[in-house]
Length: 132
Image (cartoon, rainbow, N blue to C red; front, side, top):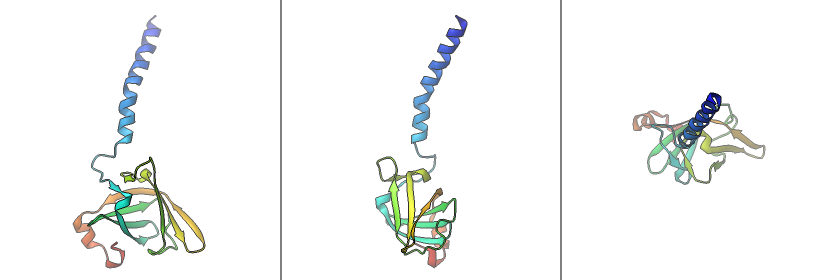
């Protein structure tokens, strides 16, 4: 009887915690800045692992890739972007599938490691050739 009570209590605790866990995973990380893919205006490549987006009227975001997917590409190469989850809201790296079309060679998929909204001072400090 004690064993049944312990198992029932454990199942009840897990069931009660599951909705809270699912809600936490669905929410953006604390302090993160979300943007809509439809607000992206321009992009520039800084190096083989860094891409900058201008978003809206004045925001700039830096996307850091986990690999060198941007090697051999230029800022004029088109991006292929798809959001995940049925909305165009991007809050976390997993919210955006990103690929770069490189001439006639093909498509280079990118794994986004981090998305960072730059402060106005950080934007001002960017070299002119990488400002989106």
